[in-house]
Length: 320
Image 1 (cartoon, helix red, strand yellow):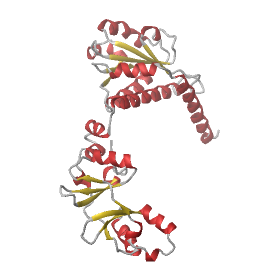
Image 2 (cartoon, rainbow, N blue to C red):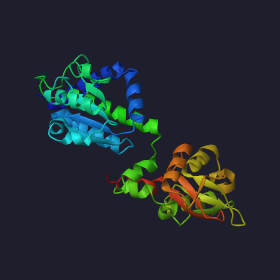
Image 3 (cartoon, helix red, strand yellow):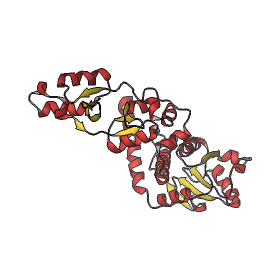
Image 4 (spheres, one colour):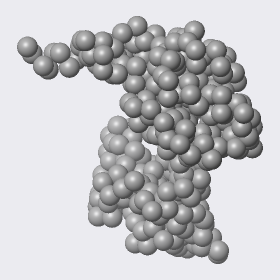
């Protein structure tokens, strides 16, 4: 057997099932998001076995993105862990078949506690489905497992539905990078995002003048390795910026590039940020303006540094 091709077939099969599942999502998702968003309690996710593992991941994703959530193993719930649940909570019960005895056993106690119940199940006509107020349908036509026994496509579907729920709640809450940093202070990204601009900026500012010739501009941009240089006038006032993009456009636009000076093709004005601002603010400005560097100024509006996107997010060194 060619396992390379077989692996591709499995990927295609699961992707096809996910697309079918996406088409089944209806207004119930809006109701679930609003119910959880308006809740005064937390979201408790329960499952067992493979779905329990998926449930744990969903709960962790929710908790780290602004939705208070815990995972409780349904089996353990019947032996004391129900004490973690109170009447203001919402409980999301995960069961592909909707007939798992461990899941069904917790329904009556949960109702007695008085919390709201939601199901994520592959059988919307199951015993579980009849006991809850809202259902997230994760049904698939078949598993990727050739025997149809090992949970494969069904757990993938559950995971993706959990991702959809997580992201919808993030957007409903207006969850931003600074919020993420607050919940991830131990990671490199978290440490960076709660830092100030002055903590990460380059202080060796690339600098040319209006009269600086094209060749020397190229040298300064290359030497400082920031993909840009500030442009100053004769009074030592920063008046513009030249980026790699400006240089490429100048080469295409002008025939005699050797005769060019900074004044001929610089961008007048530039995006700037105060050195005391948080990196989250800088990241938002970069994203809004679709740029990768910001000019940093002090209280006197003097340029004191350059902040690059790579100062904020160095993908090689991030740990979570």
